[in-house]
Amino acid sequence: MPLQINDPAPAFIGKDQDNKTIKLANFIGRKLVLYFYPKDNTPGCTAQACNLRDNYEALLQAGYEVVGVSTDSAASHKRFIEKKKLPFRLIADEDHTIHEQYGTWVQKSMFGKQYWGTARLTFVIDETSKIIKVIDRVTTASHAAQIL
Image (tube, rainbow, N blue to C red):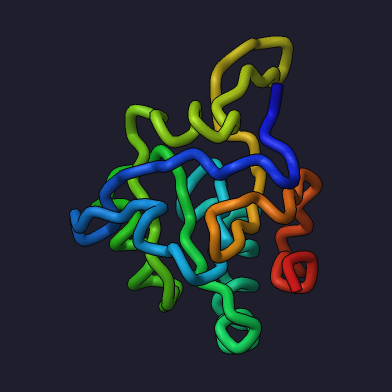
């Protein structure tokens, strides 16, 4: 069963674009926007990341930290961050462990072919690590407004 509002957020641990450890426990006492996206530098993912970047100050003022997660490598994340001037961290979940914890590693279909990939989902997690919002119909160009 997918994660829902009021569920405890799974205690993830991963590496960011600088190969630094990042984990849910780092955010105790702060609200976290944990967003899962398919691929760096693709049109929809870029629109989503840039919308979060452009509204980052408003998100911070509302008490949110932002962290993105995809199966891209740390090197890919670093290039994406530099190219798009993203002010937040991205987790390289190459083995999709965190995706599986959050139910975002799903079977997809394109042109009749089945494959596994990332479901574009955002989890808003409160100061006690409880999920307070799940956004499963992400509007990439106005994602910050969906969060706020």
